[in-house]
Picture 1 (cartoon, rainbow, N blue to C red):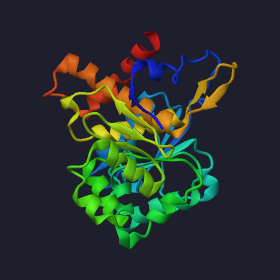
Picture 2 (cartoon, rainbow, N blue to C red):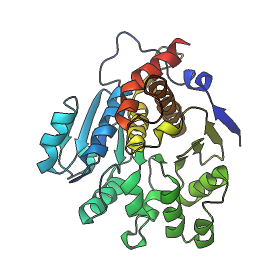
Picture 3 (cartoon, one colour):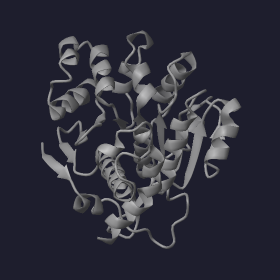
Length: 300
């Protein structure tokens, strides 16, 4: 087990400069199950986070009546309905669910299908965590028993609800007072997932018992949609193939995607704050600064 800080030097060992001969297939086919009536902004921000992180193809699973909203806001992404088969899902290099998804019956079934049918890299955030935390939906066991790796990205309130769902009443009641590293570790034990506990000094905790504390970010990032951008970033990075030392390509592990996403997300926020100040920043500013954040790490 180890505890360490997430630094640019660490990220540089994982994210590499691209080879000239790569194509969009190397850069990942990403699916985002996100958005609902009145919450399409979350889906749009997640798409932008994935695209600005270098994802080759991003597809948004959203109710069909909302296709025009998504395609106008993010023309680089495509849309598909939320009806999945195992064959459909096997085409994707990484999938995320949750931002703006809602918690109604259709959303519950969307999360259930993904947990049952998709065996690749899966990121669960926001409303996906909320429907999992509802004991009536009986989804926590599906999370624990997934064949593929999973990353969850709760804030403190979502963490508390997950602990309650797992029967940890006392732990949930004391979540606000519990140390962040300890809380993240408890969530890992409950879910079996790499856990990104969001907040000042975001923690990435792994099933191996390792804990990583982020060193980037600022108070200006405490704004609606910031977490949606992060979800897209982690998913986009996870779906890519990075150059390896042997001249080929490799997939990132769950903890590598989480660590790099968290660091670059915070760095994008720091760059936005330098330009705009902390008070006026919005989540779209973070997405716009992702390319600068990646470039600054690769050129150091």
